[in-house]
Image 1: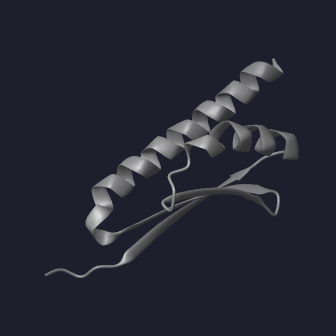
Image 2: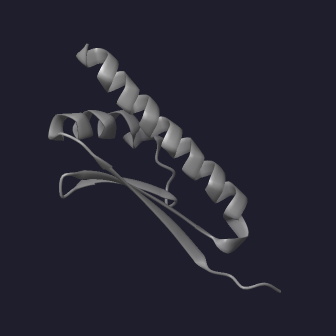
Image 3: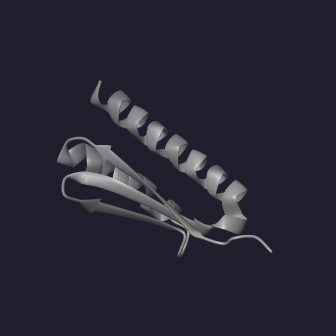
Length: 82
């Protein structure tokens, strides 16, 4: 029997209000019920990812996926601006 604990990773993204709204709208449908939450707050876009200690591998995969999604969304906003 191991120690169990809750894990939460919060990623904050900075940018202009229009940039953050565009990124938020593009990723909000990807949320996993009860595991991933996205919110615009205080001029930042936050992505919170939760899990527990017996899901560390899954949590790592989810964090990596969300980092890629955020990077792709950022790249697409930059491409559209040009």
